[in-house]
Length: 573
Image (cartoon, rainbow, N blue to C red; front, side):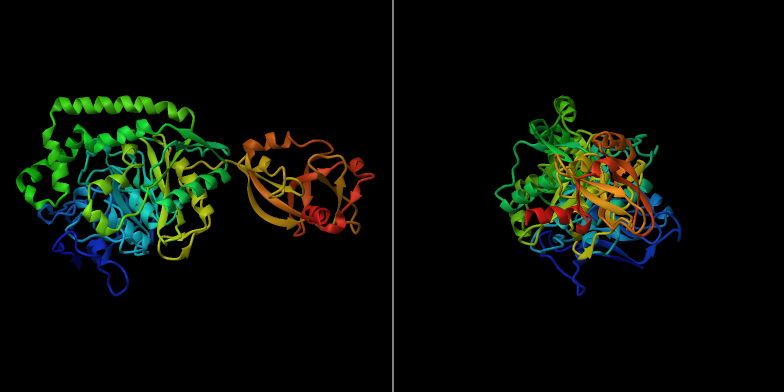
């Protein structure tokens, strides 16, 4: 059985909540029996929803407009691929009408509220898709993204929004908004799942005129990477958002990033072209036949935006396209100074009431850091960053060049885990990090450190600069003596293997480092230190720091402290 929501009496209807606490207007069609093609596959057991501008065979596609609705005769390519991978479809979600908006209030089926505070907008146009993921009703969902519709709702609801490179996922069976820049997007509560869904969903499709044969890069960003930060940012007076972004910059630095200020002006000018030039004609063209015959069935301000597309000539469109290419050329050198661009996903939050009072101006504010991305053929990943003191989420977006999707996912997962946030609005803890689907795993080596390379010690940066990560703390077997080596700068210890019964366990840390960077690390180690094989208390063995026996003669024996931290603490006390 299919349950279909009727349009509200007006698009400004207040947010409603069902007895279970969820807003029913997030859904347009809900299946009583989920649609499933099989019990096996890489997505088996996962539940998903799709935005109601994406076709599902036998179900109505409304694009948020009842007069436009038709019953799909076949699945959109992306839906078919997900079902074949074992996922089960539970329904279709609400949206800003014809995917025209970034706020979630432009629907005759009702305004979709924010998952954290129903007085605030959810973001759009993929409002329902974001809401049902944030509230835990599905594992993942599909949205669409032309100007940020797959990112803004993610940022406002504390979830992940993966906006793939254009043409990576087929848009066959998707009601176009602006077909040359449309993308099918993915919402999840963690990055690894978004990458898994992308790996299944992607692939060329001859039925989509804008599909491309693309192979995203399989290499992660280097351990030390450069991230661009716009030199001038606008938060529209939202000091909490501004502070949260400053924290995000610091967090990305802690992950190995080096901030680089960039001139945002070419990107901002490209963003303005989307609605303030003849490019808007593509939105009108997408539904021209319906719009010309049923213009009064389209709600405001969507109607006025689409109608503007009639006002431009073919020559105007050529001028706008040339201007966009010129701005792309101006922006291209920025990628010689940065590996990834960091921006706020949305500069602020707005209440539903405020958005409905100023629907065009405030909507434009929400797209300041999203509108340019598809126009300039970039990939992007919206990642949760913080819960602000007022209880509302703040998110960041990582933007990379065309086909950088896997590298963005790898960095995005590291960033998301560093926030220590919970999943969406569910309160569930984030899962342990998972390998990013599609990313080539570099070989790694484990190395044990006992002194100046320990976390927080002077030489720990030599590990982190090479992409190393701390695995665990441990102790050596009781076969070692520990010495404070005189005259070393910074102070360093020496670990020496001794006959059984004459040593003691010594505290250490075990780090994992990409093999490609291990040689440069070892080259930094001065005599009398070196790398050897250490025996641990559990009987296992690992490479780690050892010392030449001759250097310990006359050195202070600090074995009794049990480790370098305890010895250093004794000096300070």
